[in-house]
Image 1: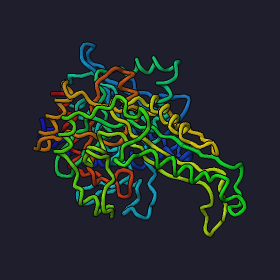
Image 2 (image 1 turned 180 degrees about the horizontal axis):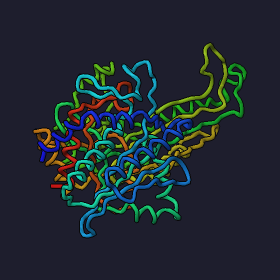
Image 3 (image 1 turned 90 degrees about the vertical axis):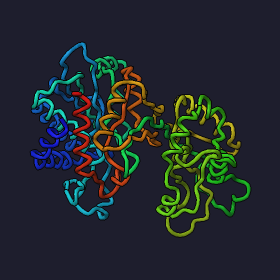
Length: 459
């Protein structure tokens, strides 16, 4: 079958590239309110492609907020298990444009690479799903699963539409019934190495919030009031310094409740640990700051974090201004691991700041959302094992299993609501420049994705 698939890809390579080019040209940047028409056009484009391929029940789902969710299915036998293929058609902003070698929304091919915003994250994998089923349906190849499709429009901006429909009592059951499946195949992943295939077996959760410390009700003269009126920036700095102890352990009471870093996961990280010296050179840092007792790979995948993403307040324009500022705000994110409940973490964080702030100040902690929990793959079921096998056949190398330090917020919501297994799949690599200038994907890796997915649903 592999030769036949590759022959089909080769015979249709120009058209496949044009399909990708057509999808890339839609500037579906969720962070821009000016791109609503781009999402409308892109979703209609995907509907037509799904219909032409041969999917059934193709439709756009409009939540009360946001852009259209794209759905389709192919139910061939009620007795078969169902796979739900997930991808997203929104992208990160392309700026800074001057660092691109070509127009980010005009897909280009050079030396075996394709360059364009979204080609690796995640429009490339989305189109690989479509080309997979185009081949399968056109050749009437028997499938061993029922298939459902979910293409979402705002993964890069907290999955607003899916978060809404799965949190609203009026829509919850409707969407659970529609997306019901045995396994969610998340094609929004990537490989962790440039020289060997890998598959993600777990992702960390995330919780983001802002902490605002207020002092006087207005900015005041630092000469007249300095020395007895408290400075909110000083207080915020003091509080943030309390978060980590001398071992870089997070010193928030109960923060680690339920956290159990398993020996087998630790050993797996040791086998796949990062090249420390190369990263230090690339980032121009002399040393790392790591929780005591853990390697960089372990700390960035198996352990929770507390990171200050930015601080603003007081005078930041050019020149001096001798004031005590009225308030200061820090933007903070935490990465969460297995068995950490984001709702409980919210309470622990609020309590930490309220218990430690001094009477001269007021503190306001505001959360962007309820956050998301970590998601871990079950490695003892057929779809996962078959995916590993087909990846090893395609690449001719043993697949390395890795945890990912990042988060895909909607994955835990979907897996929990649908009571399904989940696997992560993608063929982008660490040097694919996801979210950055010159985002790229090799044509070879794109073609392998089609081969792997075809074998997954038919063999």
